[in-house]
Length: 360
Image 1 (cartoon, rainbow, N blue to C red):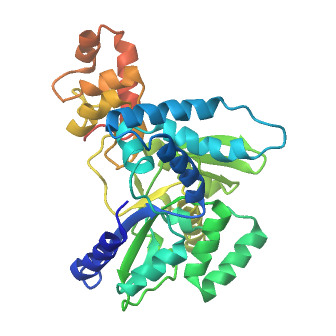
Image 2: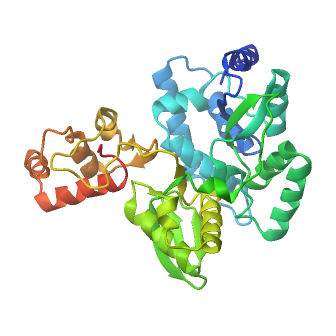
Image 3: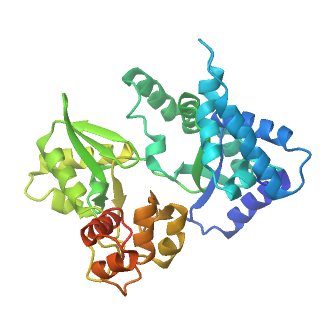
């Protein structure tokens, strides 16, 4: 989103300011997925090239996107389906995001190998993706996972690039460290033991046993009774987490190790999260429920950030309730203020708690 000299200066500043064993975070548009968003962007830029007023530029951009959405599919044509998801993302963007991203003067996407090479020129080294599941091969077909796993042993950067090719990734959130730091990438199941496990999960029965689906859509199927029991406890506790030691209580060493591997696989698949601390979040509404001032202020916009740093969509009814949860009102008083049925409002408050929006 910034010109080349500024990008270089940012990487240099990161290297200078980062502690010897510090970690830097950089997000950026990636290729090959960025090619498709770039096609939409180039059309929008051409359509609005003669417009200088930002508000009018946004209005015309939205009108153009609406026109693109009306274009019919042609039999056997891949163009529409290829771009439709990107059009949908642009249409759903706020005015700020549309102007900042798609109508920006500079918006450069990179192949991961290009980004890693540029970071290396500034004494920085790839550590991992901020979302661990983005690096996982578990969801891939076994032959493909084996090929990329073998590649990772020889060249981790190239493995990540080929994973981008396969997933058509358009956005990355990368963690960097100093180039001279030794990195131990060994995954030891023993390292699972200090963690707490969390996840907003739904369970359903499938042919393979039980399937657990996260709020983000990640899925894990298992027939192992200990794993099913553990994930049920995790689901029931959300938004709180459960210490791994509690999940493994009563299991012998072999079973505890198997559960550690199962929880690691669930984490790598993006089904659960791992924490080393418990946020000040309430799973059960108190007498006078309280949400963060930020969530209350953002409620009318229809999307807020919860106390676990996750985006949560709220409909108009939930937003109206959320805006009044400042800790001074009971659920009945909130219902009275809104002129709504008390039972329905209490159910809304319980749902907000379930999604990690209420302070402990």
